[in-house]
Structure formats: structure tokens, C-alpha cells
Image 1: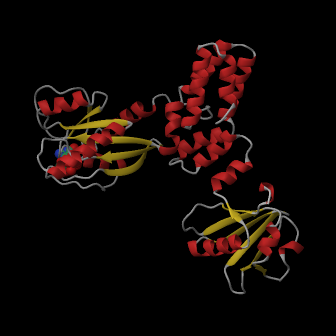
Image 2: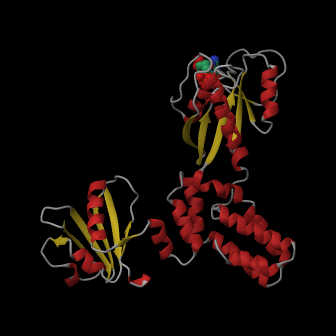
Image 3: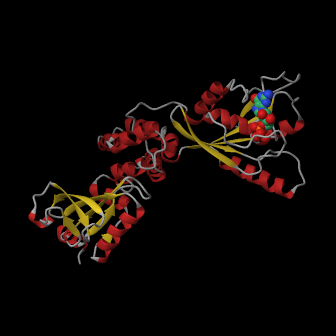
Length: 377
Ligand code: GDP
């Protein structure tokens, strides 16, 4: 059968259990296929009914799964059923056995939009972890990035290279933020055992979750908590304390801490303000010079002597936690773009924009145009 003649089945609602699920059947035999299984209340088959109406009935046999059908056109039918995996699979299996071909929802989205930026943004939206990041992705689905690229192409056709370069730079400035709109940011807390890393995570997320215990080395695994600070989705990662040890379990845990720090978008080095600054502490700040330094337990009497600059916090009294949030956001987000700003949000987009900018730096206008017109745009 030619590709256009295939009857396609797509699950439009998210995988897993929910109150309701929606399956869509598209193709030349969509109505006939669904009619094989649909037992409408009142008895008239779909093929006899007006397009655009909604019908209630059962699937396959009287007393079978309850379904509500909406027929969008001769070749598009949506089936709404209970959202349990058993009901969805029952409908799915019968339609597949009758000759439908199932496609992933991402492929269906892509088939509905001629602009790949729109479909990429809609697919990304399903992954957005906070309303704030979703709104930026929605702006891209509604054409913010497409508009900016069209404008750059126009400037290039008018041979206004300086303006095109500025416009590309303005887009690329948001690429680091765009990269995190889908997956959020990873913040790793590290430091010697017992300085209050787990307690700080509790204070930051606002509830008790990590293991807090006053015996050094309690947190042996890397623990995580998802939160949103000022609407930015952030994964806080608690690590095993960094200290000298011969215990093989602790050494392995410290290796995991180092690996976690390497991959972090921001490292927080937490120190105990009650204890004097030590050479071990110096070694940590030298090893991770870009880390944000936090002096915790500032509710206790601070130890005399030198301490490097850092945020003063008390995880126990939640003092300084607001300032810590501010500093984390300042480091991770920087300047917040305007609401409807154009933002590249995939690595492919950033790579293509960077390649276009590099081509312009070499005065290669047609190469830049190619990069702005080919995939992923
Ligand atoms: P971690 O090993 O670095 O994760 O440290 P924990 O969060 O498990 O805390 C170790 C101990 O320090 C616990 O008894 C906490 O109650 C205590 N603690 C943590 N933060 C503070 C703080 O800001 N002030 C005071 N006084 N005690 C704290």
C-alpha cells in the first residue's frame, strides 16, 4: 500500500494510566475499521452518521468497554475510552489486528505541522517540567524562533551582514537557557560529611526527604530532589561527603560525587561555619574553583579565622536560604529573556545557528543561508 493509504493509529494521551485515553485512527478505511468494533447505542453504524458528531457505545461486544467516538472527517476518527492500560491495549490490539499501523505521537505531531520548529517545540512541551519553561517553549511553538530566523534570512538576502550577525548573536545568547528548557538544571551539593548538605536540600525543597543524621558519612548514595526555584526546574543532587577514607564503600561513593560534580550545571560546596577553615577545605575550593561556596550552620557561633566569600546559611533555621536560591538562579539563568523571546531549544538548532554565525564570520553568506534553511529548520 502506498504510504498515504496506510491506516494509522496513534495514542494521543500520555502513556500509563489516566482517567481517559484518546486513540486516533486516520486513513482511507478509518471509519470502516472502527465500525468493525463499535457497537453504538441506537445501533446505527458510524458510516451512516454525520461527520462532526459524537457517539456513545461499546467496543466489540455488548457490555464491552465503553467508548465515545468523534468522527472528524471521512478518514479521521477519535476514540475516547477509559484510561486504564487494559482498556487502551484492548482497543489498540483489535485495531492493529484489523490492519492499522501504530505510529508514535511524536511522529503524528510532526505530520500535523509543516514547520519542524513548531513540532519540535510541541514535542518538547510535553517534557517541560515547569510552567515557566513551558511558556517559553509555547512561544517557540507559536513562531518566535521561526520569526527570528526568517528575519535573519531577510537581512542576509538584503546583504545587511552586520544586522544579521547581531540578530544571530541575540539568538545564540539564549541557547544555554534553551538547552535546559526541556530537562532543567542539575545542581550538585558537595562538601565534607556532616556539614549540612542533606539539610540544605530539605530547606531548599521545603520538606524533609534526604537522610539527615549527625554521624559523618550517612549519605553514601547520590540522592536527588526535583524542585522549581522561581519556576526554573532544578534537580538538587546530594552527594556522599568528601573526606579522606580507606573504606572501599566510601571511596566508591566519593568517586560518584566527583563524577556528579563534573556533570553539574552548578556545584555548591558546603562548609560548616562552626568549624575552622582547614587545608582540606582549601583543597576542595581549589579543585572546584567555579563552585558556589556556602557556609552552613551560621546559626551557631562562627569559628574564628579566615573563610572565603560565600553565602551564609542555616539549613536548620532556613536562614539565608532565600539568598542561596537567588545566587543559584543568578548563576544558572543569568538574564531572563522577554516572555515571547526567540530561543533555540535543541542542540541541533544551536549547532545550525552557530554554524551559520561562523559562516558569516568568514563572509560565506550562501553557506549561512543553507544552515538556516536546512534541518533542523
Ligand atoms: P550532610 O552529611 O552534609 O548531608 O549533613 P546533614 O544534613 O546530614 O546534617 C548533619 C547534622 O548537622 C545534622 O545533625 C543536622 O541537623 C545538622 N545541621 C545541618 N544544618 C544545620 C544548620 O544549619 N545548623 C545547625 N545548627 N545544625 C545543622
